[in-house]
Length: 123
Image (cartoon, rainbow, N blue to C red; front, side, top):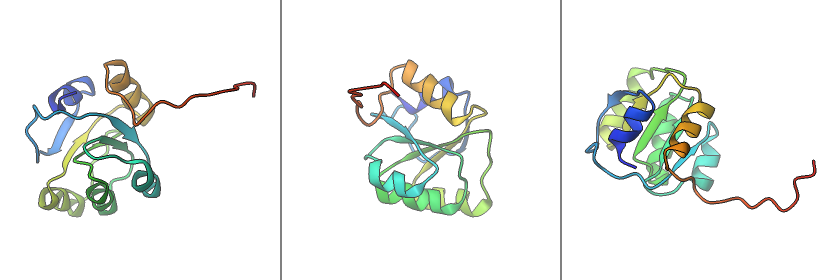
């Protein structure tokens, strides 16, 4: 899915534009725990998160993530915006919750990291 499609689907507001909006994003994911991003993030994915501190950009950079979507209409502090610009990370903000943003992108065809097979769901 192209960055421009992600922006359109999520009615996103581009905060930092570091990539061509025609660039393809192969998959998406969501996390507020940066340890999860490091453990499960993959190169080129889009990350949905509610965190806005500079650590989000640093973690994304380490995980090879080029696009971050900040959910719940969050605006990050100046330090985060500057770091995103310096490191070449595109930042987008959307009014949707993380759950809604993930659902919308998945519905439109953006896959996640991988399929989880549930053997027994008798909980």
